[in-house]
Image (cartoon, rainbow, N blue to C red):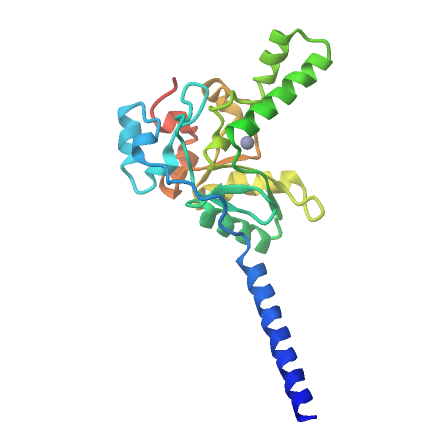
Length: 240
Ligand SMILES: [Zn+2]
């Protein structure tokens, strides 16, 4: 009898420990993902004097320019944090993203990361799919590729490959995309994020307006970019 009670108590203790472990596992999400070497200044594609100066600031790693003219280095690598929905982002900007999302939810706006980090292979697959869709509509390969490139960056030149860009859309069961986009346009800079492809900067960025695509640049740069109505190319002093 005594022994049985003791065993029951032990079973209870084991169950409690298991519950605690499960709760701890849930709380720990997002989990640190694939471990890569950190991006170093040596591997950052720094092209201009102003970019070098910008890279000297505390958030210099967040000011790397990636666009059609400035590709990622072949040996680029980044440490990622895996989000609970399976997307991942640069570990260094994750706390700012989490804080922004927490504050949005408190204010009744419900965002989700639709796309975060992409590998070069992911980017190639997205481009291939887009080209295939135009081919299916009867376009020649050259025409299909040209049309696809209006929407999809050439692999090696997408900000998503940096891990510093996120496509933020709504949890549609709770609010609309427009609600999310409006909140971000007004507030994201406070957390270090900027609207990367503004409607009035298409001629500079070479990319059509994307109200969902936000890029982490650090709070200092984001404030200047927001207040002066710049895009990242203009802020870094290069429109090449
Ligand atoms: Zn995007």
